[in-house]
Image 1 (tube, helix red, strand yellow):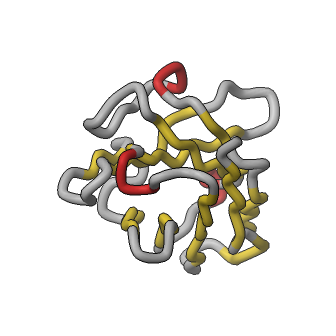
Image 2: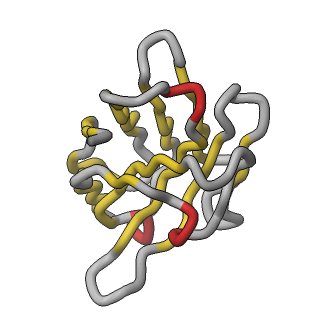
Length: 125
């Protein structure tokens, strides 16, 4: 069974930065597109960023474009989400996800086969 573990969440003031990591195991990592999603209390899980297996194509939600950067290191089986200029509305549980259904990055929750347990990001105003 594929195993995904997020880390790097925490409490930060508005305007600050955090770097999330997602370590994957029990898979051929470069065969999987990876995504970051987030879910705030009372809201649906929403797309943040996604990357293809080679790291050559990356999609971002409009709400984070220019502030967040997603990357992957296939040698370390890890994806990252660098989050800068954080806003209170970025507060949510952040999840990483892995997909074998699609090669290209996907914005759809339904395209992802495996999910991590999530890491809390709280941005204070």
